[in-house]
Image (tube, rainbow, N blue to C red; front, side, top):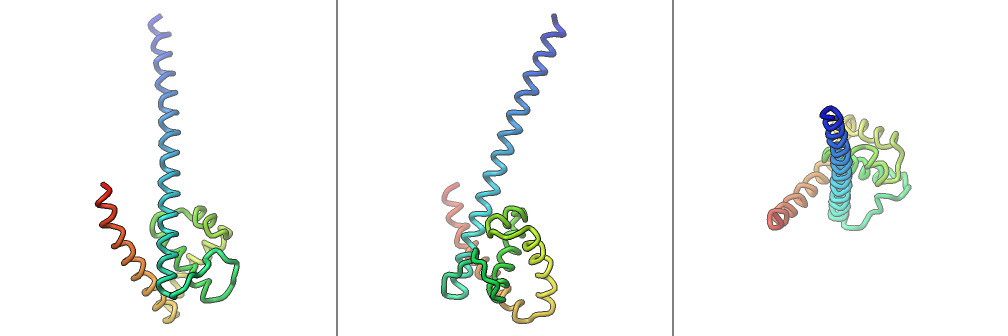
Length: 141
């Protein structure tokens, strides 16, 4: 009888562990989705501030300047801990497109002065937007 009770107790604990693991996984997905949305809003604001116009980052345009802007967005979002597959879905691009853009970023920074200057401006706008958000976050805590 005692062994049966212990087995039953272990099975109950295993079920609870599975339930808690599922809940944890749901929370992780929610946090990742929110981080991506926050980052996407921030890059949209940065692009609008930099170019004084609204640019559709999701367009299929292959204009070089827009490709460079999207690459900068991918780099920023990846640096914030977003997964490539999340960035890919958000921008409606293939996995290979995102990887290629990320891989081409460093060589472009080293060899293309115009790209480097644009990226530095982009990141400075992003940093200023992040600083604006931080005081608001402190108020909500």
